[in-house]
Amino acid sequence: MSTLTVQLGERSYPIHIGRGLLHRAGALLKERAVTSRSPLLIVSDEHTAKLYLATLENSLQESGYKTVSFVVKPGETSKSLAVFEQVITAAIKGGLDRHSAVIALGGGVVGDLAGFVAASFMRGVKFVQIPTTILAHDSSVGGKVGINHPLAKNMIGAFHQPELVLYDVDTLSTLPPREVSAGLAEMIKHGLIWDADFAHWCHDHAVDLLALDPAALEYGLKKGCSVKAEVVSRDERENDLRAILNLGHTIGHAIEAIAGYGEFLHGEAISIGMVGSALLGVKLGAAPSLVEETRDMLSSLRLPTSLPAHLDTDRLLEAMMHDKKFKEGSITFVVPRSIGYVEVVKDIPISDIRQVIEQLKE
Ligand code: NAD
Ligand code: MG
Image (tube, rainbow, N blue to C red; front, side, top):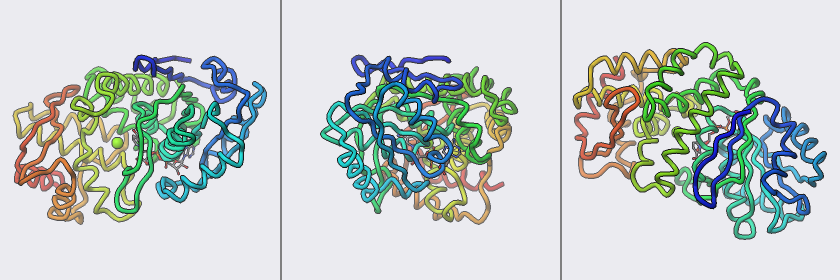
């Protein structure tokens, strides 16, 4: 097991990453002084519940914890006010009190939902994350929790740091292959924005990562979490530095907004977005090899690196204009200068973005 501490003063917390941690969950919660006098609420979705809930419940009960479980439907639609209310109802009926903890067993959806329940139930109780997707290495660090409003994603939320994160790499063995690659997109993004050696490591170990080799996953998740943790501890409330975490996301969000439902997973869309950012980087002076290098890295992780021609350029630009980063004909963009180093550049003309989108279709 490796442990990484997210340094946030009084709110610092450990992320344990390794094999077999689900079986040790009870003992690891005890170490963080989560009381067994009050019941715990475990939130999972139908997929993760079927695979891992009984193991977690047993481990917690063996350590003397009383547990209540609530299972939601898999997918983004569970990050809703209606489901939020159902989870709060389960917490009240289950007898949770101010000293209870809410545990998220699942991917980013369950993490964001359960985290928002923890942030708001009785004005805030302890929160424990047990991420079961690779993508959730991103969502389990940083303290952002929340749900969607019918008009906009992640509109209702809070900052609420967990007591601890338990990353059992054994749980990742059941992930569908597309979810694996999509999660690896955020992992290599952490290399591309901050640590060239790590980006190259992801590329060199792509075969092991795709095969869900536990040692490769443990190292990659630890490095990915540590980059995010470092950025977040320097800028907990999103003032400036934290913006670099959005590499590839401006184009990526536009792709997600206009493509048909389910055509792209988030990680797939930002993979294309990161190639777009590299094209923009070259336009602004980076070495031309940056584009091929970025494409090679992403395709080694079985991620898409170009835009399907059917996605209309004008509609993509329009979707970006709804983004708050766009004002009066120009946009703020995270631009790579080289592998491992990015800058936030203001006032990029729309005409440049239009060219990048056209190039992404070639
Ligand atoms: P997800 O939670 O929907 O999981 C993806 C799919 O994999 C689901 O069908 C799930 O049931 C299934 N699954 C999960 N673990 C599994 C396992 N071990 N084996 C088999 N199947 C499994 O999605 P995600 O990609 O983990 O997270 C996406 C969400 O995370 C989005 O809602 C996004 O907004 C959020 N997010 C939040 C932050 C943050 O900072 N809070 C950051 C990034 C993303
Ligand atoms: Mg993302």
